[in-house]
Image (cartoon, rainbow, N blue to C red):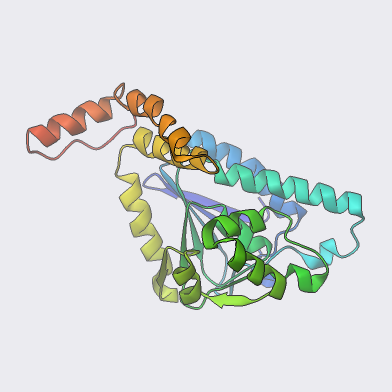
Length: 258
């Protein structure tokens, strides 16, 4: 891998976009490597994934303008299609994902963060969509995901004006789940990931899938999605051990995913 660093500790994966000299900008090479590594992560059985950017300035400061500037319409369509597929692959990983936004999250970087289940931001982080000031629009599904989080009107405002918002503002809008001092961000994300990882992995994955499938559906239709995965959890040894431990007033054994 030329642009990514991936490591696993205690069943928690850490994926770092590693192009700090260009603020971790997304180019076709990064997209191709993400496409490859996400397949492995999906099959690995890790219990949580943290995504971040190398260095102290940026999570991902957008797509690589130097690569994009001379695209034909056909090349732009291909670039958008490939990026959309990778973002969707990240969003649909079976394990929960946390974006550790350690600096600028602009354009494609904000879109990458929006595809994660939880967003934690450094207090110095900045979010925004500068695309219309560059003669384009967001191309990786960012407008759609943004509108679902902050509402249609606010999403339009941010995209139309290319406005930038602080981590604090992003938290108020519901774009960010929590903020931390820059030096404490990764530790805070590891604590969050640890809380997720200690729970029954089959149940956690089922919960994520049910929530994701509910988007765009009515409440009655969404409720119907829960019955089958709820029942499937009762096939696991983790469920038997946890409920027996609860009734016996003892600590359950570590969850195995079986």
